Image 1: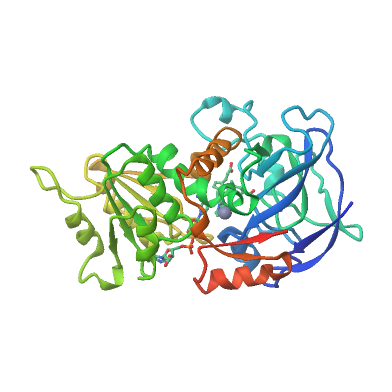
Image 2 (image 1 turned 45 degrees about the vertical axis):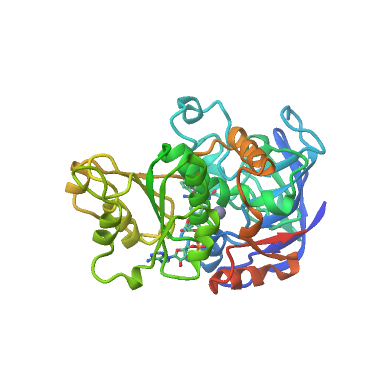
Length: 375
Ligand code: NAD
Ligand code: 022
Ligand code: ZN
């Protein structure tokens, strides 16, 4: 079939809106009509050419929502008409990783997904016979796309596509980091570094988990009001702190008879390796955990003194908030429908596919929390 897509023809070039060829679903695959897609940092990272694993030409996008319009042979868990969210982290429930119950990083289709291909090693997308790569197994910048059944979460059909697409990455990553990775307890103290599309979702996850003190840290003062909207209790702008930021945060979180400071949980939502160190070192001696969510640039390294770990701090990372996509994503959609979590205010811009490049400009200008393309 033919469908309309925003094609990344080469690194550093704007996306080109054009008609592409899409083959139907093969064994174990489904064809989706994408109704809405968010624009996320990783799409920009790959498009810029800074991602050493980026492949071109390709159809980017990994934060979508849509409807199943066709199913291939052998598909049992999905049918035409189902409302779904594509998963860049699949959940096969059969590989050693899924069976371990210790990680959400399913390995069933990992190798081919990284090569921009479907599990059988081929692509469904082409233009005039020339192959296009899939992206993160999703390619939601196309009005139609094909995914393996194991990479599709079936969700509540009442939920609005233009909001729940954000659950395909940002919402689940932020809330999941709190619930699945950190497992934050009621009454905890937390520090969130970077109050963008991820950090704000960490904040609302912390509110949901019942954290007492939720400190937001951002170099942009405009983020204070944003943080407060989602449950932040204190704001710190590192540029306005005299002296050492870590000492300042440790001082802010002093409590108990021994007056030792530091947060129970800290989260890096910047991707900046200097911030990752600050986040680790502002965690409480003896038990503080620091969760790396931000994706750093290629080749970047983190460092700290080992004494920080010897004295009981833990450094962790999380992919897709530790969420098992087919199991957890439908639950998060329900939380949204029940009013337990907020999404609407974070979607600051809604665009048509023809305006998609504007979404990248808004991200660069720091003007948007999330831009969503509606087909
Ligand atoms: P964003 O650009 O919307 O937000 C980043 C925020 O950090 C901004 O508000 C910025 O002002 C702030 N900031 C920048 N430098 C800072 C500093 N030195 N100290 C404090 N604050 C600073 O980005 P986002 O969409 O929220 O994404 C954040 C990161 O999360 C990105 O690296 C993204 O790739 C990553 N991410 C990871 C996963 C995962 O599964 N691990 C999933 C989605 C996104
Ligand atoms: C999504 N991310 C950042 C912004 N939006 C993001 C990027 C990478 C990962 C997760 C979220 C990630 C963490 C660990 C891995 N990835 C490796 C997983 C594995 O090897 O099992 C990751 C993922 C997908 C892809 C590349 C890296 C891909 O499809 N190309 C989950
Ligand atoms: Zn993303």
